[in-house]
Length: 79
Image 1 (cartoon, rainbow, N blue to C red):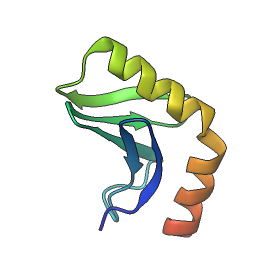
Image 2 (image 1 turned 30 degrees about the vertical axis):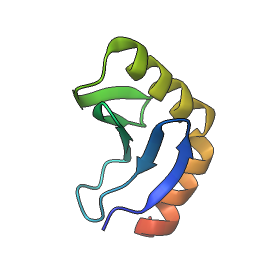
Image 3 (image 1 turned 135 degrees about the vertical axis):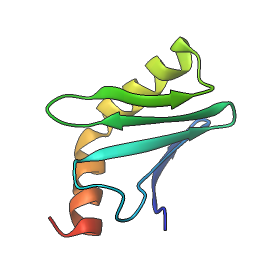
């Protein structure tokens, strides 16, 4: 299961249920995907197919919606 947290432009932010306990978010884009750690600060964990501009844009979306993403994580995973 991969619940969508939000959509912004061509980005879809989501979690994979039961993937791992460290708080993170996945970002899907028509050109590829990325995974970002959210703590202790937002930073790129992995990426496939996205260029630097797309990664920067994705990180900006995450940072803008960080509170919303963290709240969704805690509601979904109960921690």
